[in-house]
Image (cartoon, rainbow, N blue to C red; front, side, top):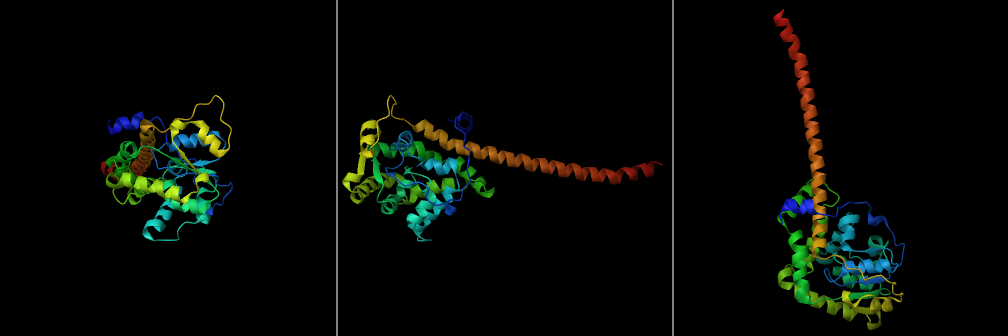
Length: 295
């Protein structure tokens, strides 16, 4: 698929309905569920399921990317503290600022802070979405990383930084998550980090507070664990397949391209206007001189 076809075939349009600085926020709803499986283990499906069960809101990686991109700056602060030793490590106060509007969280970047979130919210139930490690590894590379690390994404990202786009930190956030958490090389260390991640969560969370879950398990074990009634005549959500993930990523690229095109058109219009005014000034000076010579 060419770059142009990716842009024109994107069905989803990225828009940024909010521009909230979470550092000024506080928790408004209790944190009830931590879904700490890694991306591509059914995190989008579980988000939709939790919303259906009445949890509000449910934070997902795309929440930062496509709904409130200023979140990415705060996630990068958390990463700098965690991996670089720069700034204050996030505790419950900081997580309440960033995630205080949500009763449940899932996906990366949430999952790379599994340890910190378990410590911050020991009262929350924990769900581990599972998948065969090798299949997961291939899926992440196919659906996520080849798009995040695509050269065109890099070009658009650079332009976004230069023009101070709202989503200028989005790609950097995901790159840090998939680089630093996976010891600098996802292809080499992805499977081993996946396995150690799941072992760590299992070790930290009491058995009675942990649900090991696969999306194909459906409503019953999930609702039983959460103490919820099974939705009647509602199929379990199936979201975020490879095509949908690709479309979401390219929606961001498409949105940024449209924004940059708008900037270029405004600059061009300004230059044309300035040229016209300048040309008009020259004519105002030269025309009387020509008239005088003719006389």
